[in-house]
Length: 296
Image 1: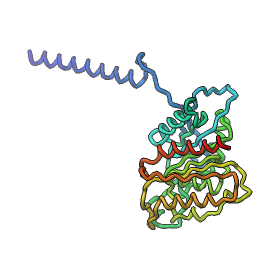
Image 2: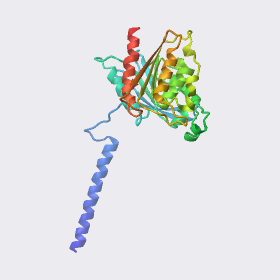
Image 3: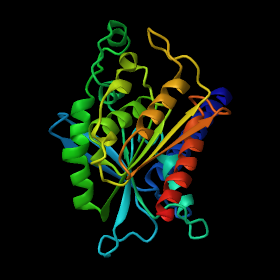
Image 4: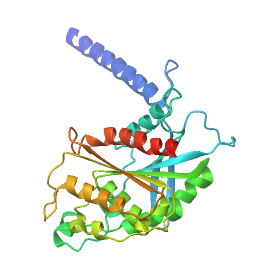
């Protein structure tokens, strides 16, 4: 009888414990705990894309004081690899920090983080190398993704949010490859380009051979370009290349432009590598690109 009673008592205590855990978890998940409230960094949009035949998630940071009924309009920073578990949170933080009134390096801006679905598909153009195709079987869809940015994403943001016509794109690694492709093929899509550790090795560096209206004297859009690279060494391509060299070649190519409205900055950060360069490079890019704007 003693053992049976003890067993029943233990079962009762176990049920009470599990119930209390369930209540605690429920409060935490539903936010009903009166002592806490959600910390909101931005908003999440789901944009159906006809061009890509899928829905795309956008993480959006709105600057302090933003109100949809105000007359103020803001620059927009488009961020590749913009998922919450990628670059969105720390880049939004950099933007906020740099537009504090006591720093005032970057104007208050909207940040649009473009979350990935198939990164290698969207950020690469078709490669002529069998090894590239084997390494990235779904690759080669950048033309559609650029079309999505131009025809669906930018119009959506500029219609729904208080956006002006100043547009920045930030891309690192394969994102840097895509940002470079846009810069050379459709330079009018953005006013500022922040290109970090670009994977120019793709298709054995063929993008570096591309001609561009950006290089012509007739190109008259004021365009600021930042190219940052760390101490990164050989690329993972079948014909190994040095990323620092490729990035420098890109900077020299753009510097050869006959246009008087294009400004390029090359930034070598030897204390950073491919994994660590992003945050520091974006910070440097803001200082350099917006310094140009103030000096003009």
